[in-house]
Length: 97
Length: 322
Image 1 (cartoon, one colour):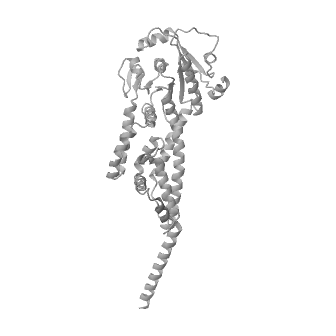
Image 2 (cartoon, chains in turn purple, red):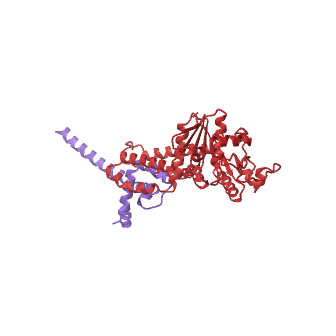
Image 3 (cartoon, rainbow over the protein chains, first blue to last red):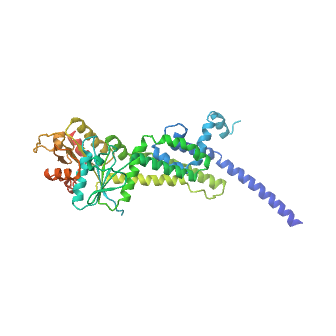
């Protein structure tokens, strides 16, 4: 019985540790993640801006990168759709409610 | 070391005689036993008229050792867009790719596409005709030619900035992966790999243009003020791209008196580079026989522009005359 009891305690402690670890790791990157998202957005805007009505770099550069940028293009389209709510995006990034 | 033909570019204002000069040079080199490919990048199709043949993008033999072709810009643009569309369709999910079709129709008419089509055609020609000794390019009028020569430098400006930004993105991705996912390996960045590939291609083309051992540039002009003014601008623009002009070819459209005591450059305030004259011809210079007779009777030897290896720094020379 005693080994079983210890095992449960050990499992609980590990669970608590894992949760704390996950929270700490989440906290540690919570500023970098939106920054990364912004950089990716800027990159997409710079290279594929033509597809949402913005002047773009020499067209062949956009075209050469296009086949590898589906994710970025989808991100760009989403941003266009939510463009009328820039403040709500900013508030959610800085956790203001 | 890669084997590639020695490339000669003929530049100048529209109608100065770029095609005639390039054909005379091509016939001369082929006559000396060299394998020559003469390519027209000019939509005016002057080479078709000179050789009295319907030229296409496939090399057409017009004389022993001389093949001629006409680059079709529209065809190149279409092929490039089709190639990109295929790649997009392979890597994208169906819906995203489907929505892009309309944009591609518009991109056909994008101004940068023309210079890019020429660059793509040029790179392909250099690779597929590596066994030729010479590739002679009859360029389109100045504005498009300059876009073409400026393309690698301009693209590099963009590509280098995009590479920096992409590296910043990847740096942050690595930090997040290290902290959040305990260093789980992140996927290789295909976009960065593609950017590096583009950078290498543009650097190679830029280095090619800047190397007088691989590429030579000749400005063809007449003795009228407009073509001379444009020739001086060509010299200045090539200088700004770090490209050295090899020499000038003065094509006489009228029976002008010659002054052997004054050099062409002094007479026309051009930098003191190598120069040759194509004397006035009362007959239209059309057909191989007419051109060969003309070159023989006037003792024209454009090949001397290549033998005389000394290439002056045109930038310094240009400052002197100004």
